[in-house]
Amino acid sequence: MESITEVIKTVQRPEKVLQYGEGNFLRAFVDWQIDITNEKTDFNGNVVIVQPLEHGLGDAINAQKGLYTTVLRGMQSGKAVEEFRPITSVSRCINPYNDFNEYIRCAENPDLRFVISNTTEAGIAYNAHDRLDDTPQTSFPGKVTAFLYRRFEYFHGDPDKALVFIPCELIDKNGDKLKEIVEQYAAEWNLGDNFRVWLDLCDFCNSLVDRIVPGYPKDEYGILCKKIGYEDTLLDAAEIFHLWVIETKCDHSAEFPLVKAGLNVIWTNDMSFYRTRKVRILNGAHTSTVPAAFLYGLNTVEDCIHDPLIFSLMKKGIFEEIIPSMDGNISELQSYAHDVLERFANPFIKHQLLSITLNSVSKFKTRILPSITGYIAKKSGVPPVLAFSCAALIAFYKGKNHTNNELTGMRGSEPYPIKDGDAILAAFSGLYSDSTLSHKDIVHTILSNTGWWGEDLTLYAGFEETVAGFFTGIQNEGIKSVISGLVG
Image (cartoon, rainbow, N blue to C red):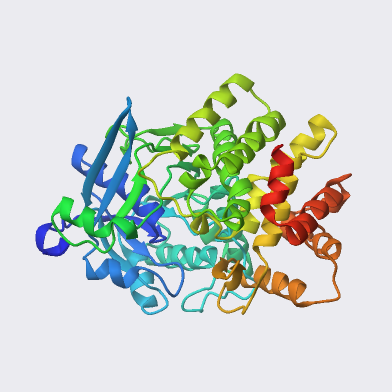
């Protein structure tokens, strides 16, 4: 069978978008939308991708000349729908760890206007060791600062060469946070007042993304390649639904005509409602259920929907704890939650639970902790399912052999990867290797870590005791027994 590069032609366009992140999500969400926008409007722009970590998909993307195929599947009006689209909007991927000069040279591109990113919830973070003369900087904001300073110098502070940033990381006010760290580097690196004035001309938007993207459909690869008629090692599967909410002080809709292309994009000056609803309910349902469901023995989100015990756990958490913790119209929130569960049941989406567990500590802080504290404030009690989810998270992180952002955990006799920042993994590894610590000691140490949670969670009355009780139960009785008792 021929390869995608022999069947699909690349399309040369000006590189108007710089994208930090080459993973499945951005390629099936942002780059897919830009491809449609190129087809249906006069945008005429391609994406140049920057690989944010040293090891990634860059070589595979370049081997296919930026080409790949999205596989969108779902149910519409009771009928199964499957859409294949060859994506021609990506021109190349740069690995700054191998070719920093080519990365920084992109700052000299006069056509460049938009910057997209998805470096996970842990990506928009400050690193005190980053310096301007590093090649490259370790952190994503450090790379951005060096890039912007080069652009400022090359174009002599031309206001028209300022950029529009649309981060897609699932943290609150992601654009504001990114700009805050870039400004911190600018001050520490003594980049000058003129640069900081120019930096204010760059628009750091906040954004919210919503599409379930399981990514590479390994188990169906051969069947799908026969359907499309060529080999594509970068097949990217996603659901049909998509929503992109972009909060900005300026209207970029004409310059970036996503809405004109018929896409479900909302430009707004206040995205708080959309973000809270999505992060707390959709993402919250994932993060509160997945570690427990995986330890229980399941492997995909669809498995969770079809398993009566885990589905009961998920529903109880959503409808009895997450939604009651929120402000807003309860019936509207419940309706959205029912739609989310229907999306989770999409028979075409094989969303691996392990892929969702990446960086679960920061995800728990963003997605679950606000529901816990909101519930406690409103109900004057501890939400049991969410407390259990915290215990299950701690149990999931039980691993050893800490190497390169990964621990090895065991589910029965089966090893599994635990992926997070090295400091977080080292902390868990140290706790679990200390035989003098009790279950209560482990829980207390984790919940009192203000660096992880932004506050001491042991100060909430009854929360530590509830989590410790569930954690002890998981260790002594097994997770199935604890869940059975919890959901009745």
